[in-house]
Image (cartoon, rainbow over all chains, first blue to last red):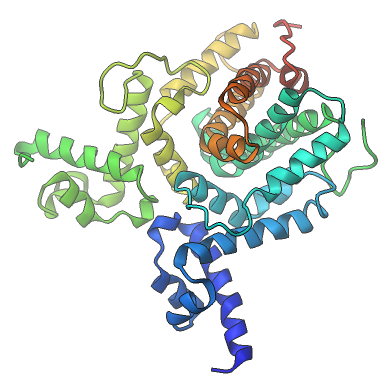
Length: 197
Length: 204
């Protein structure tokens, strides 16, 4: 196998790992399954990543890096409700990682989004109360990830029809805007203009 | 382990097996054979009593929901908490995990029973808002959002508080504020003010 193809195999393995993580938790994924999903030789999992867990960890971190770089524009704005909800990989993998935490592999960290949020809130409201800031971040994570994961089923549980999902989503968006507004932030929605701090 | 005998024991053993496995992995990854093996019964009995795997998994989820609504602990004994308390589902990690796995897989909508805890919450919120017994659509929306907020927090609390490197005192402070935020969601108050620790009065 040529060097170029080995390089392609590395990317294919990372993509395959992320697809499988959206389907099930890390403990239910084997190295052989990732290799098969990527269409590459099993030996390359170890060649490129050392272990299955390290591959899964890197795949997840790569997605979080992408989120911070694109949706958060390098950490200069919060993630919108729309962006989170439309990124099934993000909420499904986050859910599986929360259900079945992957042991740390020692290189890099998986907190990049949280760190970006903390910096964002601190910069936007420098003299604010830390507990207020943590609560805002906690509530934003709970709502923005809770909505795509639990929203569709909850709508029918309260006796609304799925046709009324947009109404629930508007409410989630309004709450997110209010939470962000209380620390002087504003999601980068396409329709948005200027800050409200 | 004793082998379940007779229809009642076999059914109960299979529902228990379903409840347990639902908290361990996504529903689409659970096989009929695994369910039978966990229950200690013959594979054919899954079909005989439930018609198939998915009906049995629905029963397992309904069983967990009912147990949670009764305020039972994971072991089935009475718990020292009430399901109406904020974030009370944390006391039932088995049920929370089952809902989370099924929801991520998009399988939750198939269990369309109205949840007893949500129903009680609807009635209570409608009452506190002074709009009578029949909840308005607005109340339903707020209860739906409050429910997903609680589930979302219980699922991601460890990830978020760990990532923010909060110590146990700080976690408690955040939890107390999140209870105020939850209250604000349910009562239509300002969630930003609640996050600051300001307790707005009801009915304003």
